[in-house]
Structures are given as C-alpha cells and as structure tokens.
Length: 384
Image 1 (cartoon, helix red, strand yellow):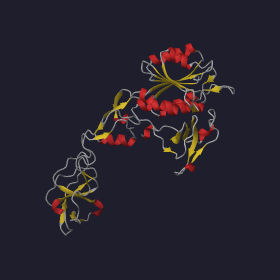
Image 2 (spheres, one colour):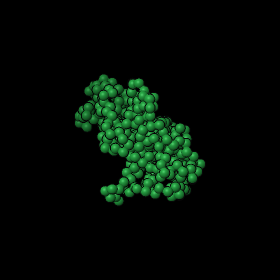
Image 3 (cartoon, rainbow, N blue to C red):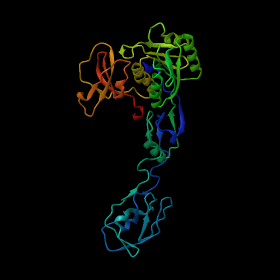
Image 4 (cartoon, one colour):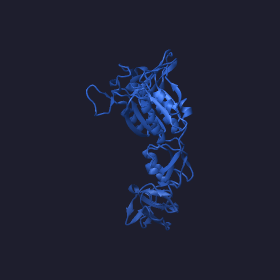
C-alpha cells in the first residue's frame, strides 16, 4: 500500500561532483567518447606499421617525445617516437613498444620483436561512445561513478531531490539528550530515526518533543505542512490510550488515515496517513525498538517509493513451514556462512530492550503465515 500511495518526487539538476549517494532521476548519457582519442596505454615508443613483423637488426631513429596533452604529429619513415602514457598516438602509428622492452643503441631503437597491431593503444571510444546510455534511473551514485561520469564528459545530471522529513516526539515525559535527570525518559527515538533517515539521504529536521495535547500537536502539524515537509514522522502517542492523541491530531489537519495498527510485533500501533497537500504522516510507537522497526520497514518503504526505487527484497528466505499468528520482527545476528545455523535470534526481544541492537546486524521476519525472511539491520539504499 505505501509504495502505491507515495510517488517519485520532482527531480533537480546538480553538478556531477555533488551527486554522491544521490539517485538518478533519468537515464544518464555519455557526452563524449572515452578515450577521446587513440591514446598510449604505456610509456614506450610509437612505431609504424612497416616496423611490425619479425625482429631484425635494423634500427629506427628516435624522434622528439610525444607527451600527454600535446597534439600528435605523423611518424616519419623509420621513426620511433618516445611516447608517454595518456599521450595521443600518431595517426600512422600501429603499436606502442613498452619502454622496458626497448633496446637503444647509439640513440637508435633496435627494431623490436614482433608486435600485434594495436598493442598498448587505447582506441577512441572503446570504453564509451558519445550518446551511450550509462545509467538507468534509480541508480545510486558512488565515488567510482562520479569519476567515470566526469571522464565521459557528464557535467550535470538529474537526480531525485532529497526527501524532506520532519521528526517530532510526542510525550510530556520526554527530555532531550543531555537535559535529563536519572529518572527522566530520554527522547532516544528522535535522534535514532533522524540518523536512520539521514543515512538514507533524506533532508531531516529533528524538532524535539511536544506535549500531549491535541491542539498543540495539530498546530505543529499545520506549521510543518506550511513548510512543505514531505514526510512528518512522529514517535509515541500512536496507541489507543487517553493520552494517545496522534490520530485525532492528524485528522484535525485534514490527514486521511490509511491504516492504524498492524498485526505485528513490535510496532503494532503504527499509523500511516496521507494529506491532500501531498505530505505523508507516519506515527511510530514510543517503545524504541518498535519505533526503529516502524522507521526501518514502513518509513523506508515510503522513502524508496519517493526516490523511484522498488521495494526492498529480503537477503534470504528460509525453507521452513510458515507460522500462524502475528508477524514478528526479531533482532538477529548473522555470521559467515550460508546455513540456517549462521543466523542467531538474539535474546531480549521486548520492544524496550536496546542492548541486543549493540550486536544485531539483521532482522528475521517470522509468522503471519508467510515464510521467514532475513533483512539487514538497515536498508542500505546506497548499495542499490
């Protein structure tokens, strides 16, 4: 449902040097040939076709050096020209003799052993031709891709805009990090969700906590809507208690609740709502592991859709009889290997227990009458 209701955002054009970890919004084409000309692959000597063949005792006179960046001149008859790696190859040169294999006698090059035509020459366009499609939409830009695109003459590219996310904690009892007493409850969810979404490339604003009052929550929502945040993520206040005021506040500002409550543990009270202005609301539970699960699997599904990416696939599906009952999302640790024994379900699965996350690197999703699956602890969008 979430993937169907969140659409890709408008793209923006940015310089290719600034595109690290951004996602392409349209195909990227090469702007020029690479290599842009026939280029020497080695330091050595450019020789003509008449010198190819069996080695003999003839000598080639050594011409002026050909350096990178200088225009190539035709080889004269009987000439061997010193050439640097990356230098343009003379049009009538047939091969490059590697310098280490050259024999120089009295400022002349002894005719080399047999060379294959084209040896040690990088041909123009052998890696890419101008107009070649290099990347499809939805590709995450890595440092290596930035280097390649620059070589192919790409100066700028259309990428998906960073999703704008506001994070708000609901609860009179919450205190910010560093502003607590021994008996205070720290808002650990806000920094955790902010880090998760920031690591996914979102433009995140962490707003702290707000008191449990419907009008105050709705007023905060109205301000965020005016500020054109695309995603409004809250933690706490999502259940059905007397002080759980998220849903009425969402509906008060015109939000359309698509679902409220999921048959799963942890994270049952999660809320998903849309707004006519295009914003999306996610109400995550207050227990920290439940909040993390909601952000990891529900909010990140929306972020993927916003970036034009498909739903995440599990890294593994287990061969076992599906279990009935609610879907359970279990903290797990995987080890090297490929057998079932290499996946350990960690102890302390309660939604308030954070210590297992210090060693967890995966989630096992079990139950709901579906085969069990394995997902990494975090959705690594940049590996897409």
